[in-house]
Length: 70
Image 1 (cartoon, helix red, strand yellow):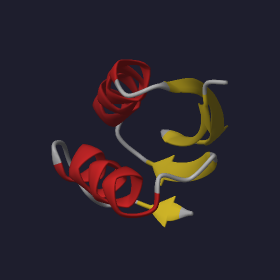
Image 2 (tube, rainbow, N blue to C red):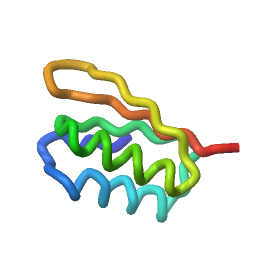
Image 3 (cartoon, rainbow, N blue to C red):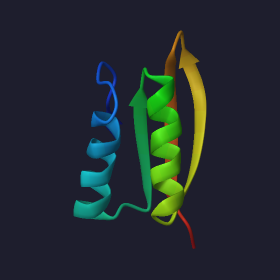
């Protein structure tokens, strides 16, 4: 899991990019508190072989689940 709350773009995307490059996880959970980060991480995921689902977990807080495409 990556907790990117408190970081503004592009840092959340960079954190996800590093994890994907290093470990190529089948599934990755990401916490963010920036709506822009939700859009950018979703775009990154789709461009790198992942499906992305997001849900709001609180006031301006979101949980993203990235799942590697089969």
